[in-house]
Length: 334
Image (cartoon, rainbow, N blue to C red):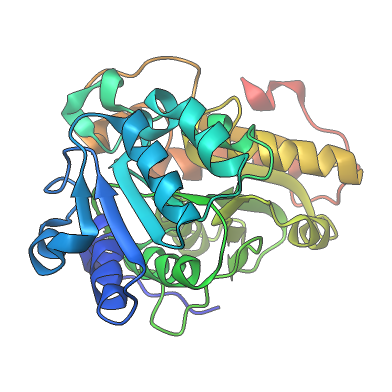
């Protein structure tokens, strides 16, 4: 698949809000709800254009989700917006019971995911949301990689019935796709084809993994596979099985606690499928990061291009391009 490398003028927030605004022009069942974050979630245009279908509940995330569930039972299509840390934690019970348990047609848009809140610090960082939502039966968890795919998933979700959770980054990201991108729940996309090492990433980490792979190629290093696993639940087991045929190592990259997120989902699937794959999970190492500029934190926790490249080189140094099943040195995870 050909991917683009220019930086989008829109963040995922701006792109998804723009798509919702467009959809609301023809679909009168769509209602947008926020918890006092219209500006932060880029919803001011929707608020101005569609005041009768825009609800600001104030700082009351639990109430927001319950209102959305009630509206869904009346035939509306609510899209609720707040920071992902607030939706997944403050409104956890309402998302579980009012939305997923009842299969209410509510789409939860969790913004400012991971550490993208920057200097707001740990209270505003969303490091547990994937684990929380994944653990809810019958849940769907989506983490697009750029603005284009974010908008396409919003469009898809507006056309299908049932609940879902979408995890969006706050900041502008490299635009990896064009308008031909097709959003499909439960399917990952292979962006570059290699062998031995497959880097499976979500969200903002996809572009960093692509950049790391490009640098390795330019320097004569290993040709790696990079996968955008936009749907974390259900994870694409068929793709994982195919990758295991010519890869010995999976490296997952996510801006989330290393427990409960993408790495856990891939590891569980690989074990249950009997793939015999070595797994390295790059993520937040079970701690509460401090408030720093986002680039600083991503470098600090191994989520930037340079760090991902170094991790790949370390694994390649001990595999030497060998086939799955050969031995590995024990210091690879140090």
